[in-house]
Length: 256
Image (cartoon, rainbow, N blue to C red; front, side, top):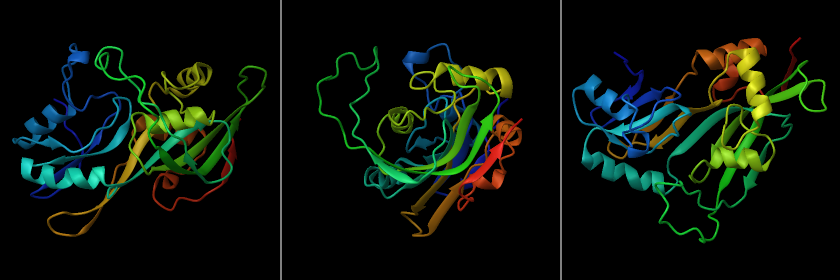
């Protein structure tokens, strides 16, 4: 039986390290699935849990739950009001050489089935992502007209929470996140599958910061990466310390 890694727990909240590929809760869109974070955690703790936010199915990392409906109602305004601060890490195609803030509004991304009755003509919503490069690599694997392929390890801090915001923002910059089948580049996804045993989206929710609504403590929750991430980092000679807050910027490696 799968047991989730618990990153933080008190009498009000619990956070887990969500595995890539696992749905947060049941969905009629994925009726064939049998394993979900919410139900698994409920069985593991022996009590009901209340999801406070979501991570896309292919994204791994910190996922926070309330242990009562009352604490959930207190936490929801923090997420809605930008009082929860999140840090993500990703591997993207190409070299990002400078830190920047992307302010690029996004149109609502509708699901063909679940959102078929929703409005499609709404104005784009504000979407802001701060990002910075942590490391680079160039590998002798040809792609297109190039004899080598280049990749970057980046840190991202979303200031808004639009659907698929990080994936769509990186697509806009032509620095697609590796493993993204909807907004990515299939050629580079194939390189990672064939050469680095990487069959997942290389996007990880590493850190969550917030002021505890009951105790008023400053809470920082960190989630370590999985074996696929570790294998990619070892292959590129990237230190795993780069995936912690304050990781060095601009490290450049060449993998032969």
